[in-house]
Length: 254
Length: 359
Image (cartoon, rainbow over all chains, first blue to last red; front, side):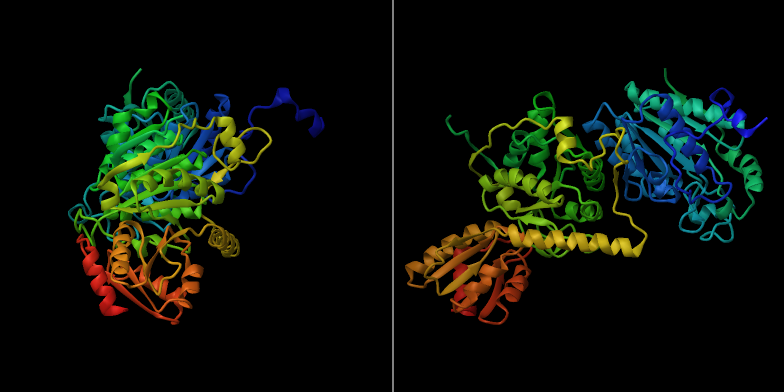
């Protein structure tokens, strides 16, 4: 059998989403961002919304998200994505609007914008990547850094007396009447990816059905920041991150 | 058709003008002395008539970022605030300038620094025309001196913002914002449709349709060679604006031997000073910059060869006077007179200062 006999539409079991372009990704090996990007691309495509979707990228590792997904994007100042998305959606209610934010962006500098957009029940999707560290700037403490976890600004481990507690901001967002869906997912294995995609799709659908703000938190790895191999990172995440940030729906209003 | 003459505050005029000029969105946060803008808009409920979005944001920071988001979709969007709130907006303003987005910002100035006072001031001149936020950028700055101009400059502001894809700021003060006078409101303009927006602003994030590249609104460029190119493009645009958009008004300047230079409410008071001086036989004129950036340097330079001296009259410690001196370039004496911290000068004390410093 020749190669050309195999490459046929009926034999296709997997392909890159059309929305993902061929730009080389800057993410580190083992990083969760690439998988999450792919899931977003798949959901937008499967919903037939690629001509109506506007993404808002953050300041953080995903600052160049707009280089990888062929949709219209706005690059936000650090933490301000929910305010920007608010106006995009309010002024263009027929569009599908999402923010893509890390833990520092969403839960530290952008806390006010996040809480108030969610409290107003803006019909947007907030994709929240929580890897408990500032990846882009070189591994500093994030609001979600675990107690005792070493980072470049907590070299002896996060000290609660000094730095306060890991911020479970999704739990806080789930308390707000403006949110319709708040869920915590992960993408470290195929089963988790499938489950995460299902909830991501629901989040985007909710945003178009006027069901308020949808928050999809991805508990994620940062191999470079954590100074571990990708395999070690996944194991460390399961053993340490999941107890602090348990997976599942925090709120799912039908 | 009879003219639509109303009696109202400058702040109210801004709100009514915004609805009538077909503005798509207003995002603001309460602060004295400009809260009537948001209050008037919410009272008028334009979302039920023109479809205009009016939203009270959680902070000035959020409001300016909402403006960024709305402007990025090609819509006509604006915000307003007063001095301390405008300081909070500076990050967003720098990003808007860096992403070359059109929008209108209104600053109804009050006395500072810090929390300062709620009384009128013109002490944000430097912040507005010399920077404010980070980076090499410029704001087209319109300085109204009447309620009528506060209404008119909403229209002019958006016209210039879209002509140059650049933020425009209306630099008013607590006097113009709060005082009531007659105003002729503009006729109603319909808001632009999505198709019109896409035609007018093909860069807008209206959803990537087949056959075009994704539109990305950003001020980020890590490659310094490309970032320099961007900056060179900005500077070329600013040069064009400087060449084409200088606006000023001359008041009894034809035979003037001396000039007052004043903007906004100071110019209003200086008109009386000119009148009083001329009653005493002093040939005094007034030049009122309407655009503070671009600054009317050329006409001031021309006058420097014809008059004996100039007094820059400002409600601050001497800010615009620096630009007057740059324009005059040492040809004649230029001095400053101001009152600070929310105190407004009288015509008599301005004339007295003129006699002491210049005459």
